Each structure stands twice: as structure tokens, then as C-alpha cells.
Length: 424
Ligand SMILES: Nc1ncnc2c1ncn2[C@@H]1O[C@H](COP(=O)(O)OP(=O)(O)O)[C@@H](O)[C@H]1O
Ligand SMILES: CC(=O)OP(=O)(O)O
Ligand SMILES: [Mg+2]
Image: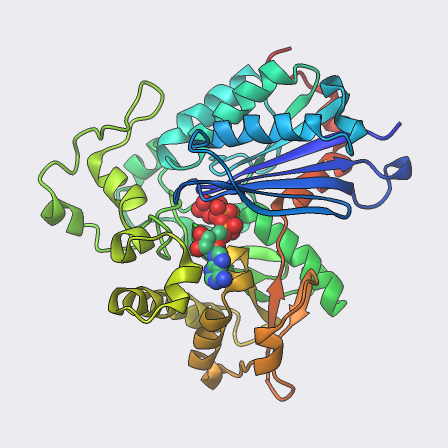
């Protein structure tokens, strides 16, 4: 009997849920049955996209009641179980595994079955990923009630970066305090980077262990990662997903002193603090009230790219500039031995103008785009958009965090099946 896997990806602005069945004899990739995405949680009203075989719904606007990641999860689950074309989900107890993308996993180097202890541990990390961990846990809680037969597994965005060397992930601060409070660079978007390594390795027919990439995952949150021999060597996000590149509502790296000049109450608790999550006003401002939203009024980078309003052009140029701040040093860290520059995530996949601007600016390193391919890349998982005589390749990867998590279930079934999960 094939097993049904539900893969749940709670991003800061969206919830993506894919349904898979295990392949014959559990050999090969999980088989996707359906995919539902609710987008626009930070730019309401939210909208639903749904795909099952030939059935495709594009951007159906939802009523104003879908505001949080948990609302989106409940809505999608209801939608999936009511879809007559999806008999595999008719009975909720048929769902064997639910995979949850959890952004901050602290020191966890790999996925974990979520039992009471892991749940508690992930909850403790919520302060360090205020846009992500708490919403993901609200989905875990809802799922353990609605789907009590399923095993809940956490896949951590941070695990992929466990390979970052000490001198790169250590902050130059008092080491006693750093150790006690576990203050170091963790890095995120790792599920996506793992997918990217797998996809590019297949595409270039080069073993993962030999693959060097400069990978850019650009969505609501954006990060860059330097991948050496298939492993993370450096990444732009840090202790929290705030560091590095700006995002939809995040400032990215700024002078840490700035906050004390921005407001006198930087260290006071913000209104969004709760018993479960302590967040200061500074963190609230930099995580939720900055980035594209603060510069332009919208979180939609598609709209920003298409506009010639002064503030949109400024936001666009800031993003290009900050991206160069990572592409160039990563090129150096890889000693110029780069198999590809990779664009992924909502903006990386759809941002024609952004890709063009970034690559134009690193032409001196040997990257060059084919204009036609960049403008019409098609729908493959990996697309080569580099010009014929470019020294280095530029690729678009349609990253799929849900598939990467479901693959993890198949790889690890024995370990996962032995452990107890929350709600059981
Ligand atoms: N045509 C476009 N050009 C550039 N960016 C786009 C376009 N369409 C959508 N986007 C951006 O993609 C982002 C969503 O990326 P995604 O990776 O799905 O987000 P999340 O971080 O929530 O997973 C949106 O916030 C929007 O800014
Ligand atoms: C880590 C992170 O920022 O994730 P997302 O881009 O999905 O919000
Ligand atoms: Mg995302």
C-alpha cells in the first residue's frame, strides 16, 4: 500500500502544501498528487493556487478570514479532503506522515520526529525566528489534533548549514556569552539549498561532492549561500533570518547601532510579544516593518520591479546592490571555481529584470545571460539561462521544499516510524 505524505511549508508570506504518495516499493521520488498554495499573507487578501493533474486554479482570491499560516493550513486541508478528484485523502487517517518546514532548528543537524520534547525545544527557538517558528508550531499543533494518526516530522532550514566552519559561523563577541546563549550564525532556507544541490548535480551530471555553487534563494525572505563540494560553506542569514539580504518586511543587515537611534524603546517588549514569544520593539520593526514594505508600501517584488516610481526603483537598486555584496565574496571564497550561479525562490524564479541586473553587474567575473532564455525560461526544474560564451553558468532552479522534505521521509522511514509523535 502506498503511504500518503503531506508536506507543509510555512513561509513568512505563504503556506504551500503538497500531497504525495510513496512510489512502488518505496524506490524513487515521492509521487505528487496535488499542490495547494496560499500566498499573500503579508499583502492581504490572500489567494489560493491549486494543482491536481490537469486541474489548475490560478490565484483565486480568498475572503479576509485567512490571515495566519494556521488559517491557511486549515483551509487547505479542508479543501484537499473535499476534492473528489483526490480519493487518496478522503479519509484523513490515511495520511501517514506530515512534514513540517521549521525554520530555526538550533543545533539539530537533521530532521526530527516531533514529540513533546522536540516541540518544546522548537518553541524555545521561536524568539530567534519570529516570523516562522511559532506559525509552524501552530500548524503542528493543529495537525496533531486534526490528523492524530499521522507522524509529524520537523525538517529544519538550519540543518543544511551545520557544515559551516567555525571561523565563519562564530561572531567576534565574548565567547562565554556566545556559548551560553548559543549565539552563532545558523543560516536558513537549507531545505531549499539541499533541493538545489540535488537538482543541479543531476542537471550538470556532476556528483554533489564536487559541486560548487553560489545559490540565491530569493522569496519573501532572501538569502545567499556559498556551496563548496555540495555543502554549505557560508550563508548570508545569521543567528536569525533577519541578517543578510533585505526581504518583504525585513531590513536585512544594518549597523546594529542604528536601532538605538531609530527608537528609544528598542529593547522594550513589542505588542506582538506573547507568553510563547518574546520579541522586542527593535526586532518587530526590523522583521515586520522594514524591507520592501517600508520602502514602497508593497511586499510584492513583482510589482516593484515593474514600476518606475522613485521608491520602487530605489528598492530594486538596493536589492541588486545587496546581492552583489554576497555574490562577489562567495566567488572569491570558492577561488573562482564555480559551477553555477543559481536563482531560486519566488523572486529568483520570476524576477526577469532582477536576474538581468545582478548578472550584468557580475559580468566582470565571467557570468553572462542569454536575453531570450532569461525572459522565457519555461517550466523545467533547472533552466540554463547563460549566454553561449559565458565563462560560468547561470541557472534558474524551481526549488521545491515540500518535495525535498517528502524525499527525506522515504530516505529515513525506518528511523521515523520507530518514534512517537505529539498527540499520540
Ligand atoms: N513576477 C515577479 N517578479 C519578481 N518577484 C515576484 C514576481 N511574482 C512574485 N514575486 C515575488 O515572489 C515572492 C514570493 O516568493 P516565495 O518564495 O514563494 O515566498 P515565501 O518566502 O513566502 O516562500 C513574493 O513576495 C513576490 O515578491
Ligand atoms: C527563512 C526565511 O526567511 O523563509 P521565507 O523566505 O520562507 O520567509
Ligand atoms: Mg519560502
